[in-house]
Amino acid sequence: MSDTPDIRKGLVGVYADVSAVSKVMPETNSLTYRGYPVQDLCENASFDETAYLLWHGELPTAGQLTAFRTQEKANRALSPTLLRVLAEFPKSAHPMDALRTAVSFMGMEDPEAADISDAAQRRKAMRLLAKIPTAVAATNRISKGLAPIAPDQGLPFCENFFHMVFGKVPAPEVIKAFDVSMILYAEHTFNASTYTARLVTSSMSDMHSAITAAIGSLKGPLHGGANEAVMHMLKEIPSPDVAEAWLRERFDHKALVMGFGHRVYKTGDSRVPTMKKYAEVMARVVGDERWMKTSAVLAQVMLTEKNIHPNLDFPAGPAYYLMGFDIPMFTPIFVCSRITGWAAHVLEQGADNRLIRPLSHYTGVTERAVVPLASRG
Ligand SMILES: CC(=O)SCCNC(=O)CCNC(=O)[C@H](O)C(C)(C)COP(=O)(O)OP(=O)(O)OC[C@H]1O[C@@H](n2cnc3c(N)ncnc32)[C@H](O)[C@@H]1OP(=O)(O)O
Ligand SMILES: O=C([O-])CC(=O)C(=O)O
Image 1 (tube, rainbow, N blue to C red):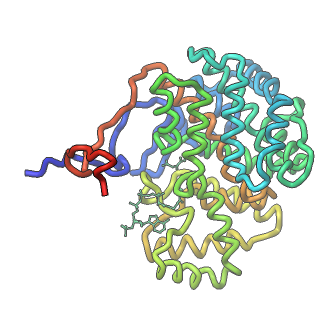
Image 2: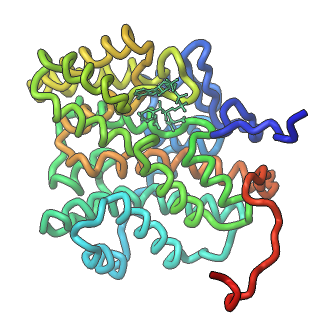
Image 3: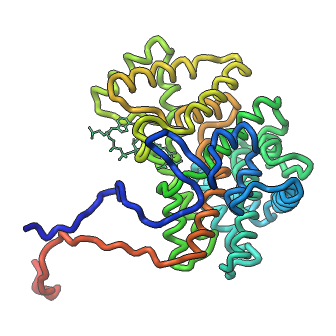
């Protein structure tokens, strides 16, 4: 009889804890946040209402939303020190690396750095929700030799982000497409970055440490980094007519096709139809159908040849490109949204904590004695 314990590589199929934040239902390709279908939230609520929902368990009343928005607007500005630090980062730094370091720095500056009470962690989550977009926009502008644009407290969350990146606010349909992407990216149960945040929290560490680690996890191309990889891939394909041939060559090299496949959804990602609809809106607004046409060919061939469906990153990549964002900003934009889900999980983990510490099954050399240095040859 083998003495190998039951190891689930990648924790495939393992329930690691309970959670009341969201529910992924792969059998129906659906997703709810605190019981609300994500599509319903996209059509009938805003991203900041969704953030409130994730943190408080209920949608806000008008008064609660006004108070939430006031708090968010009041916390947007970065300190002069952090702005100077951002300006000193290596010009070659990827914006996700810059953001990881910026969030870590925010942790040192936070007025309640040492306080991990639920109330303090909630206030820190609000400060992160408000400041992360400012850091993302400033990093982007600094990388182009442009001066950062200060947040405008008179503008709502999404409008303010465009203002800080481009110095202007686009048409309402662009804002709506962006807001929808933010709702769709907000939360997704125990994905790698959220689990990272919970794991860090489980040692009774603080919000900024958990979020810094989560950003590191999200950056990888198998996770959030895929939205950038999708756009690089689409740009490699000269036109929709050659997309099928391009993909078949990729099959020959057994290469991953970015933006396809998912650990939990095997017959379609709940969020893709909504994001695709708004990516198509963006294609019409901009008058550039190339990316959606190429995407349609890739999705069709991946389905018929591999039976693999696109994930959220597949339509989100071209949608952000059509909104005018530089490709290295796509995963940082994901962070601007996912901070809401991460923080909800940090709060949930903190409220009923047990140190996360799994076992490893040893497969190295058998026990042996140290040979003194003089005798080693
Ligand atoms: C927001 C998000 O994080 S969504 C995920 C974003 N990531 C990507 O888009 C990266 C590309 N996708 C992938 O690498 C994978 O699908 C993952 C990492 C997302 C999921 O991985 P897993 O659950 O481990 O899938 P798994 O490896 O079991 O896939 C099953 C089979 O499909 C293949 N497959 C899965 N995804 C892809 C893909 N994108 N391209 C080509 N083949 C794929 C695997 O190679 C595997 O084939 P095999 O059985 O011949 O070995
Ligand atoms: O759930 C996952 O593994 C990845 C994902 O789609 C997400 O984090 O949004």
